[in-house]
Length: 337
Image (cartoon, rainbow, N blue to C red; front, side, top):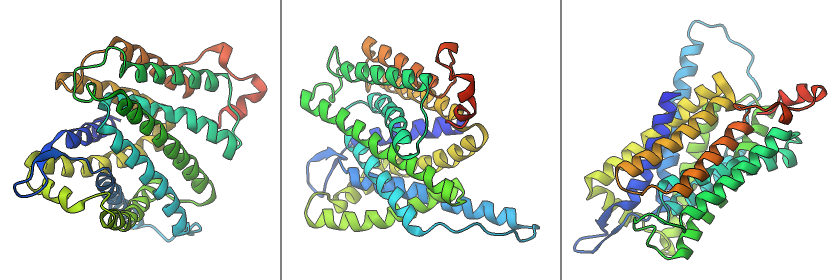
């Protein structure tokens, strides 16, 4: 859990650090920020693809000295591509948001995934939601509302806080939109897991491989239409040691985060992961305050507390008898995440 907490926090901080770097875009050119959200998504996919190496390694170790066992039906490659496109879209939207709002606000707004996961679980998985689910979602919504307000009421003195209000609205909107795609990916992956026996580490690794292929094609089109400039991104990375270190660090941190996340999920399911997510938000905010990337905001603190409480309640880390399902519904409730 500690490894997952540290690697997840490092990834968010490093992605924010990248967009804060002012580096020339070419020989004799003026310095500008590293604003390449699509290229950053490709970096994330490279990190996820490393999980496939870890998966192959674990499979090799497991097969040593063991007799052959019946193989489960292999999942078609198209299922990984669908999940990859959802992941790509969510990651890119979040990367765009890093330029506009503070990393702690980005991380807190990501809590909206609880709302959309709850909704999609009912619609697509037919999962029953109980009182603690609904109250938890309500608290998450309230917390995100306060966190969003903190970007406008008594905002910090950072460059993002001094930006026009519409840019901060856009940043929050991008984050919220990203969670729709992220929640869709989680529900879709659950469908895959129920239909095929696919190890989670293989899922992440295959999504990374598919993501690299999608990224190469997408960046080719974006460069052709001058919507993205990969040569500029490459020039900035190769002419800034801090930026290069952040790029390498982000690739390995996302790989470690996904690898450790799979382990935590296998051992303690969503409860442990929700605890890590809450702790991760605290750590990211603390680092931002320490590095003076952000200033303390009471409204943001209040929003975070409500958001964290709602997340913990949704995952039953905090329980109230009045919100528990009726005895006849307990067998169903036990199946809920």
